[in-house]
Length: 241
Length: 296
Image (cartoon, rainbow over the protein chains, first blue to last red):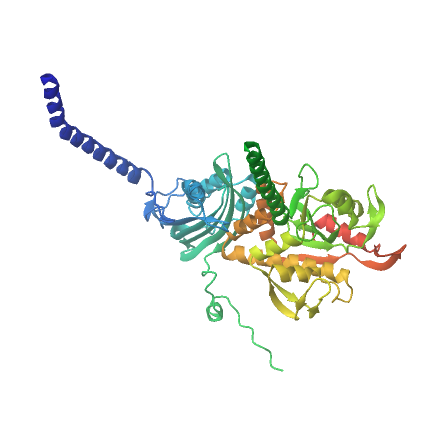
């Protein structure tokens, strides 16, 4: 009986020490996990629908074009559920949420080298598009103007709608604005595109696209006055009778 | 006593279960009226040309869309290569050969053999390989238009059709909700050429839908996913959702201004006691052009 009492007393004394040790270990693990997450991937996971995928950082120049360091603008990617006529259930929300990293990665993967390295861009388009869509995308020559040098991307925005409840189809609206030197002059160019994607065997592929060279003003805030001040816009005056 | 209670309980339960089943089946026939399917088992678009047969059944509320006659028959062609297309409209009283049933009005093909027989009938007279059919009826049409938020269309003349479609609209641009849209596409009494004008108006309505889709997708591409969800809610699909998505994407890439709207040339006549219309030989050149380019 006395031996039992002694053991129990010793256990009581050890308990706070044990708890402290467990707490410390948990803290260390937490710090390590947090460091790994923030250092390993370009972006921390976000609960909110908007996220900045990568901070503005210099990107190494591609091998096939020895140029100075390139500034890449931060990606602003928003992934939202679409095709909803009613309140979303938590399981559907989770299903859409689960596709966020893969969808963002697909769009970024296509556009990161688009204005910088034509060979790399081609390889990525061929990997991420269906053969027909890839052929058309590459044929449309939507990258940087020929002879462009010292290309910097100024703005990279993507808004991706994912269908519910399946999360197997998506529509991505992508806008990229860049500048570069062409024949000694700094020119502004870019691309506004809609990518139509489907998911099969866990992989997102672009099945079709609508793209045009940018940049352009935001589509919904045009006024007649703004349009008339656009370069290249011609005024059509009424002929006098 | 126990037996009597058990019987009473069983009776109440059977009435409840039966009621639920009946309500369910009623909701299914009411809500899932339009149908989309393939005409042939394999889908092989030739030169990226796609033809879809759009059928409007005259089934009233609560009745299934199949096993009825068709009031609207449109062959929609899209050429993905050129981004052009067309809608070829067939008046419902067109007197033609229905395979297996001899000469009859074209709208009887749906009654005899469903959308596939109607598609085969049209393939026989036009020589066009039809890829898909889409069938809708009153309830489904109204529901789809309602859930898409209405459609903007120009009504060419004032409409006042109390006895038939119930259309009462002034001439000019209107934003039509589900019920008004249905009345507009059904109205033939207010038009000088009756059913021939009506079929042209139905195609105009399809083009107005396409215009709306493109406008919404231009602002936000995810709008296509919303449209798909609406169609899915009101449609019994016999094609995969991926195929529907691809068709939707194709539609967003086609400008309404690049879509022709042609009604087959006809002459009005009699076949026995029945008043019918005969498709004139001039239609052959239209079929040929449509078959070759998928545009009009």
